[in-house]
Length: 100
Image (cartoon, rainbow, N blue to C red; front, top):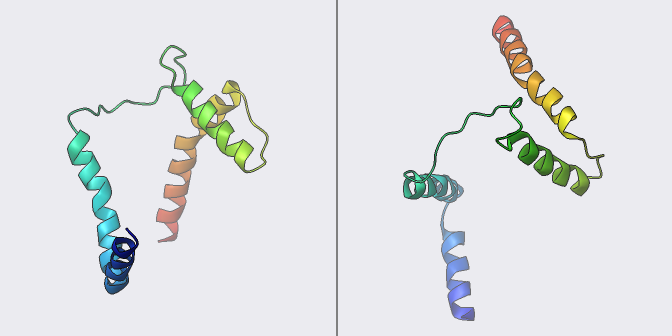
């Protein structure tokens, strides 16, 4: 097993950075192709409590907050922030377009 690991390390050292990046970019495509018939697009709805979207985003953001020493927030704060994302994106896009 040690010989296999060292030969794999030699192979990765022989590849250029560009090749390594291309290999990493192929992984999501392979995963998407494999599971494309099982994945469904779901639109985020912050005002519907029955779909669990806000609960999931709140839980995920609180886990990240705890990991970085930030105070966790409740579902209402998550809704407030989620409601401001699209207007912030539109404002930023308009500003960048105006400066271009």
